[in-house]
Length: 377
Image (tube, rainbow, N blue to C red; front, top):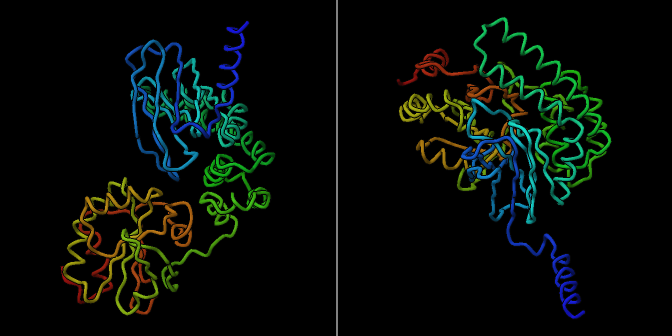
């Protein structure tokens, strides 16, 4: 009897351990039909950027991740390192709890995540409705990626993908209309609204108006608001739109404060190869013309740490600012940025005199020489 009572007490105490009492997260995965030795990566997401933070090798169909968090909960994703035989990712919200991941296929979008934090519960309510469709999308993408059958076959595959995606978007929209108050719902709606023209501004506004105040303050909700409001994007001949942002040291800058010189606005991102390719020419222009020209790099990374490390690595010495809103809202929405790099050349009075996208060698010098007669090369 005493032995039975002791067992019951232990079981009771274990049941009383809450997520708050944990000091780390634990992700435990069980996969079937995946060979041992397969590497799986765990990425942390900030905004739209994901950065790999850990990896594990599958042994006996199992993997495990255990660590602490800077932000609770945090959005993460699981993905196979092998991009030839596998495709897609498994999104999950991680808090200080035990999170179970169960999968039966090579497409991580089909995996089932079990967690108690409210953001994971909300994500599951959407994913459970489209899991099979998402798996179908990823199977088509894998075929496209490995297709050797020519352009015609690839075009047919893309048509099939677009058809399946349209169905998935409609199901997601209905689920979000019913339960809009979650970080996943807001992000999914923003992503779909940017690329699916069938989602109307009226539909977005109705969902936005249902959001709790705390969710309306999130970055993706601000992105939704920028879609709804139809901002007037400045064009050649217009006055520049003011930007308030900060440099890597936290110093505040106001774009209007730079009037009096020519201004070159360079909207760039760390992962943008042409942006990095343009840096030597940008550096040369800055060094030779800083008396009459102010160059301002406006960074579009969602992850501020990524921006700061990239700025240091590339030794950016000209004005280098970010409003922390990446390509989702803020400066990117005010200037209608869709491609990196995007350049705006502004005269000393604050009027936009040229605008172009992309980079080719010597293009910056050629473009600016057309407007600044005393430009030093």
